[in-house]
Amino acid sequence: MFYYEVTATLKGAEAREAYLTWLKGGHAAALLQWAERAEVISLEQGPDEAALWRVKSVYCFQDRAAYERYVREGAPALRAEGLALAERLGGISFERALGEGWSCEPLG
Image (cartoon, rainbow, N blue to C red; front, side, top):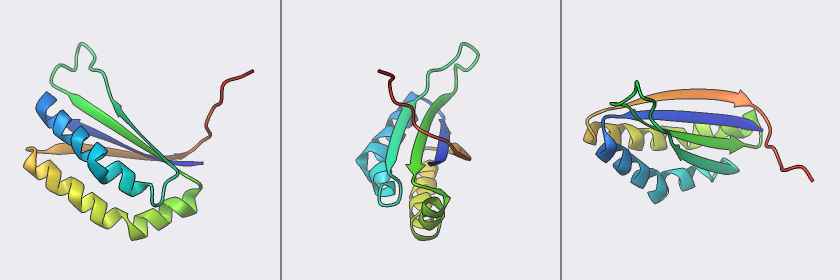
């Protein structure tokens, strides 16, 4: 499996809720044209992160080739939507990560 992870840092709870609504309203589902699974996690804040509101999106692709196909075919338009949303919300910082891995199933 090949994973693509995006962590968005937003400027407040209201912006986080708008971002989550956007993800749930179609962005995450649109990625499923290329990815096999999508997960969205609203991260808890630590005591020293009072002003940080973060959301992590994790997309699981069959392999790197499937991810690269997404980058060519889907990413330009979807990323443009994300940048437009960031502008409307007063800025969003995006951090991206890539990696290979596997899914764990319960034992027994």
